[in-house]
Image 1: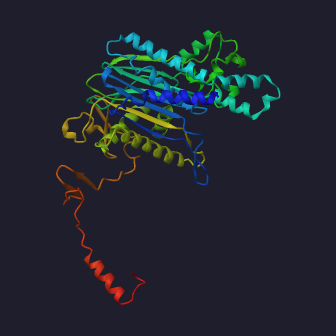
Image 2: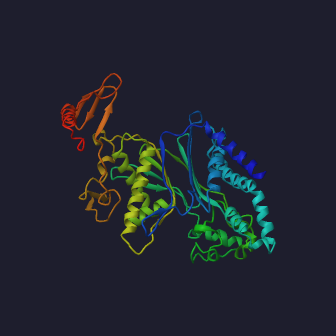
Image 3: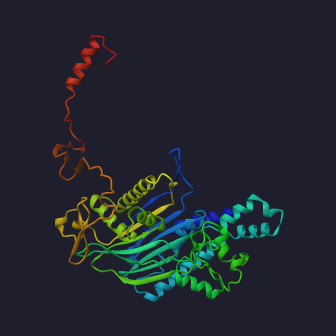
Length: 458
């Protein structure tokens, strides 16, 4: 009965935002996880766990973007993707609202959605408690399934744009940054904070609660990682380190939940003339960029986006974002294949891009970055004002990139002309190309062979 109610509950959430328009100034690219077997086959390690959204409400001058990196299943990332927008875009954020109230609403949305998720799996939590207390049921395989389900969670980064101001909130380690244009090329401003045991502020927070994190060991080993995958100190979902933390010996001394759903919020940030992009990406994507280039991943990802936008100026931002993700996946695979001793595997990757300036492909139109994109192995890069040197490091946008296929033709409907390889070919009233290849000699030869009984070569 509970499953049926939960299904209807989630369907209602979906319908609430079905009528909210998608932001056309944004795009999403993604790639599902894979492991490369020694026999050459590629198989998924698990189901796809990432989710995202991108909404726009023109009547409120409001845009909302989110990327959710799930772990131990997609239950939480899917739930939050459906529920969180309803907390923010259905009239809660209005143009005349104060900045501090915007932050409060975002913070409340994260916390309330986290509680609502746990409420939606209340029967699973109760069944788990009963089975854990019964020695016979404790060895049942169903308990292992319940343990995995209740430990499902996600990292989340959400960006709100209201009244020409940007607010970015996050839990976990999904990356968010702004890309600015300038005479020396693109520059990036990070907006997200990694909530892991590597974050000193988070370690201090845990110490104040009564837990002294070691920060060492293997995060994939449960005995060394009581906080769950990736050592997240803030995330959505993951009940064992929230409501159930007293069941974990090394966390039982904490005075409150060691892992929380309350986000850290950056903003308001005013949208200036030189702002190019807002980028939200999963940590796995940025890690792949760094592994391939050994360069600062956010800056390299920004340059790669500009590279693909220049290469596909008439494409949608989703096409550009997907081309960028595909580029990174290809380069990551090639990089890993060069090391025959390593097992190639990669996690889900998601990239969301919001464009603040519609750029043209023609450098003569005056865009400050079109001439700064790498065009050949001899491209020069300005590292500091007044200092120019040849780029020695391998980057994703130059020597490491495969040649892209060139478009052989384009259609211009308004002129009624089809341009193919430099030739102008007329089209009829229905937009179809008139025949321009003469097949007469072919049919003549065909008929002659048929008349001579030569059916073998026909």
